[in-house]
Image (cartoon, rainbow, N blue to C red; front, side, top):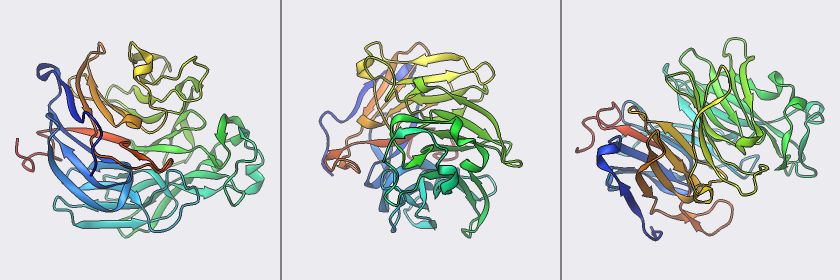
Length: 356
């Protein structure tokens, strides 16, 4: 594939990094890649439909990934439609097609799979939705809402949650500049240890925890200063981490941040932003995760840049994605990455599979 200028690792302070391997699938790529700390490709998977979403490694070493499905999606942007599991040798060992799937999917401990999907909101409820750009409903005139759908290994739906049935939609206005084709635009789904789900809604700047038993929202937080957040998840210390994209906020110039938030007080307890705010901004996609020693691994998705920072904000590792492909929005070549993950060399996902 063509390469972008100055690819690969540009910063590597070995004594300060968390050593491991990084997995990612560039947007619309036909490959998912595993790289080492030197930026060298140590493994790749060929993916049949072109990945647009989220690549993860399961504990058995298999690749779990959202792909572009064979059927059209209700919402063309962020189209998914297929979830696959590939073994280490690239063989498809599980395949699930649902043209309403988008953004995120996760394998559960019981072998089931949970993912985000779209469904048309009933017109009676649709009329109560506030905000967004007038006249920008989906091509069929509907507004689509987010669904959490759980399927068993055979692909049968065993549990489902529809946002509009458990949220008073009029209390969650869509950010003014976003189209009204969808209510929520969930981009992250995280199964919690107790069976509940954490879900993040971009266009209403809301993160919520759904009780799996009652289907009620048991915790939520909204902050319009996030500017359409991505990758919210709970840390081992029970704080919330998320990538605050910084799009369509009141700031004089857009910039992104990574935030750690106390879920009890809802106060920010740690923040990363570049000292030169214009140097760190991804208005869409992206993510961040806390590494075991305390560093934070960040995916600045719109620029295909992954980097690791210390708690003090020092950049100790940086990689620029060299693999480019067609933009799903604009047609030109780009090196976008929805999300990337770092795995320890001793982790079940990596151990004895990669030469150290």
